[in-house]
Length: 221
Ligand code: GSN
Image 1: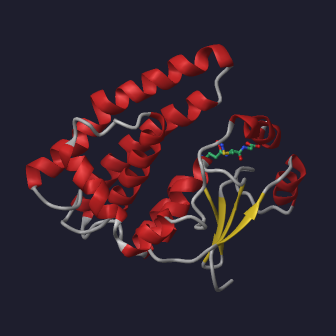
Image 2 (image 1 turned 60 degrees about the vertical axis):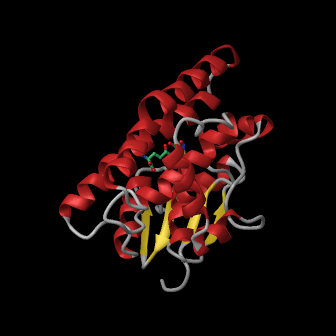
């Protein structure tokens, strides 16, 4: 296969959104095929396209890639967003895995039963400001550079901006105590490929709406 990558997932953020972000930051155009029903997912499974019977799946460079981290690693390496050597890559991996944990906490809270939802979200957001954001504020402070690793845009910056904007949807003042993250946000939001992705009409997805949750659950469960 040649041409644009094709993304197979539901029309929602979920585990595909970081992949959309990374492709957009790399300036790569892509197509999306949205699963609307359980049958659509079943069709991909019975066609043998899903190695572990799960999406995200991305058709790229003749492969049908699954496992969102593997997909992100491939895109990051291919588009030079993964550091210049093993040590930079190790740092990027640590930062990105921290953000993945944080995203998982927040994403999971939306799918909890009603009585648990608020508490789970509050706990997740508390961890953002007590554990995760201080780490990135300190990284920027200690080296005094514009980007997290190697003085150059990497996937860690892309995922951090995505995370900041997502957290601010829940907690608009989340950056109040993090001045360097505020300037990081302003700076990275202005990188042309990213700026374009942040504008209306881009493939960026909105936060999941309450009313969409049953439909998403029906596809995946
Ligand atoms: O990151 C990944 O791609 C995998 N480690 C997890 C993929 C995954 O959990 N996929 C779900 C939907 S996305 N939800 O979180 C999935 O395809 N579930 C359907 C099924 O039959 O397992």
